[in-house]
Length: 363
Image (cartoon, rainbow, N blue to C red; front, top):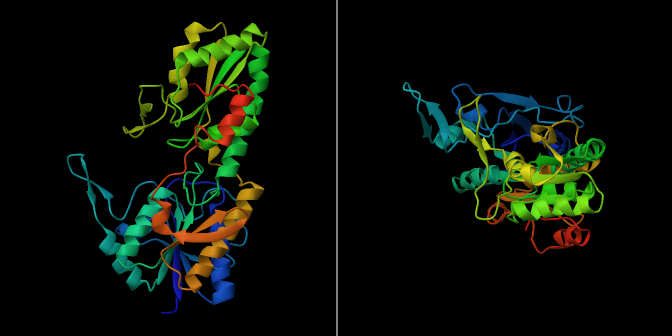
């Protein structure tokens, strides 16, 4: 069956480069294959909520979106078609499976295939929809770079550059005030942002989820620097960093009353502050790593991914996800994308290089 109309959806967290994918996929589909394109607004909410919300996508609509951060379609971490949250009268929440409603709406709207842009959660949804007969093509997106089947995901380079620039700026104020700066960056299970940004900015300590840390190891590194007359230190902490025999740091979100990831840098800073003769400061970069204009690398990668996704649709190659292998854009089975996460190897070359340069990895 030839594809006449496709939908594009952006799921999960936002990141720089999403609009580059939307632009390239839309333009390729229309110009090269004569396929009509619409966008699903706010992740899957646009198809599972009572009111359907679609954004027509044409050449004019995507013309100037390449340098813009975020996604013109909107996105969300909630509203999954297999677990849509419904608030009850007593304030409790139940989760409904609205996937069949979504399939019916796709049919009613004449949508033949979906290009799904997202991370491991979105790809897991793509696989389930595929098993239900939906024609899907995946595009990997995550600033954490934690999908193992692709060398890089778009958004990661921009996030690393933002974190690196922040660390560069904190170096000068740490030096001026004789402070130990604890800087928390994103990375729940994969410490790639902390690893890359920390190494690029010359951090003294890098704490990753993959290498549980010891407080005394961090203290020893700071003291060793002080003994050499260096009166400041930069400690990069991935938000998923954990102490040995400890658990991931969670905090209560006072605005939503939900538990969320956070507090890793404050936890290690609190444990260290009474053991060193330096002022301690904590900076949490948070969502600033997701925002703003995408880097050159992410614009180009997003463009190549979007073009490749539209080509897969036109060729009838469904159930596939585009990937980057070396310098070449390829594709793989979506199932392979969710089988195993891409984590920092504690014995890998990057960690070895950091250790050789005197960086403390916390162990």
